[in-house]
Image (cartoon, rainbow over all chains, first blue to last red; front, side, top):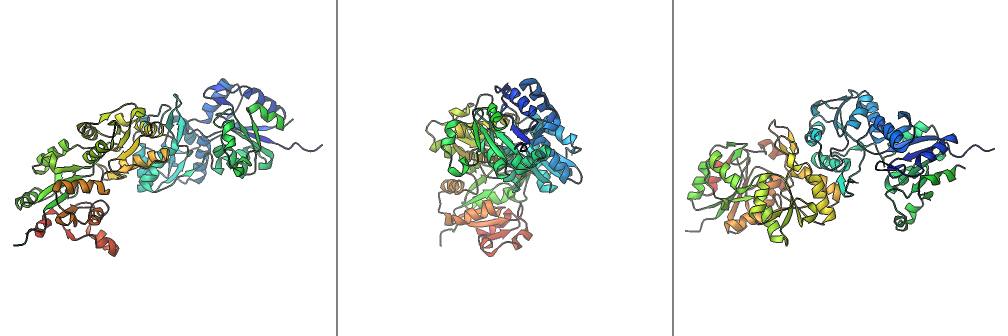
Length: 275
Length: 275
């Protein structure tokens, strides 16, 4: 008997396991079955706003998937991990939401209010889910600029995502829009930890403890999920339950099309690869 | 007797006639003497926040220079003028402060709250003088993005200035930092009306009613004052009472140095050119 081909699967969360707070049909059952076959499952999200604790809660209570923080690779936690590993003083000037703060603090980093004390600027999104700059982030444009220009702080960002659909389906700005402002003002480009950076995929592979060739990436977007995962040598699955639609596939050039190993309607299709 | 060489003078305001709200010594007296020689004086400011009414008040009460709105060419009023001339519906989605709103409305434009009704996005700075996003501008990043992406609104900016010194002398963001965010999110670059755009200089020359060769530009900055004025054929005077210091001049390349016709310690030096 030959050993099983796959040892682990990385699941993108939004558009793959849930849409908003609604589970995608078959998500919980599929994960259960895959675990039953001995596969190590890791969940990945690029959101700049939520901590692992918050995602454990969402996956358990909204989607019915039992998870522990060790099963999660989030842009927030990966960024905190990257900064903790590269920092000498641990002093961080932070832009964003409570979930990111939580991850920075749980990685032993110290949030400073004075930008000139910072060794790192860590940028998530200063905008809320309706597109307002939140009350706590109203001075953060200035703070980030001062940390970078006056304290020569290193500039790290959770993700490069410029726009999201708001509650009304219309665009609201995200981290990438904030980054555009700061780069315009300072001339400094951030290091990006979240997707499509390879950094976050490397962390996920480390958690699974397998070679890229033994791992499947399941995502709903080409630019953030399929292309970077394929470049690292993973098997790629595109599901059509999220942002990419069947008709989008017809418009792809041959080179991009070849990066998608499998296309399924939804997450249940993944079971076919491991039977 | 040969006719006088110069018919008019354009004065930049900040760093030339005042610093903050303190007049620069000799400013009022110099303007009075120049007027006494029959020169037409125009005052120019790139600030995105103030209207002509507000500047009349500042020049009169803080610096002691008697002016009427017709003597002023402001980035705010010039932008309103540009939009009024190029608009068909007059509907503007506006980002910034009360002074800009005042100019837009006094040019007959209609400020709309719904970005999707806008024909133009007019961008000043959403930041206050301490570097906070003001309460009224907290949703304006989203609004500007929606106007541009959903309503295909034209994107016009008061100035491209990315940073200013705040009350503590440290940088705070301006209009240009906001523009960096919106261009990152939408891929659209704004039309800029204020300095260093030629647009605002053309409006000043029109007011004076003279050829560029008959007009002096007095400013404290190379990039915004001297270079664009020289390119249009004006005589240029750099004063050292503002942002440019004597030691900065030594670092200039020959081509830039040649764009400065005269260097004076302060505004009083201009009198030497017209005696």
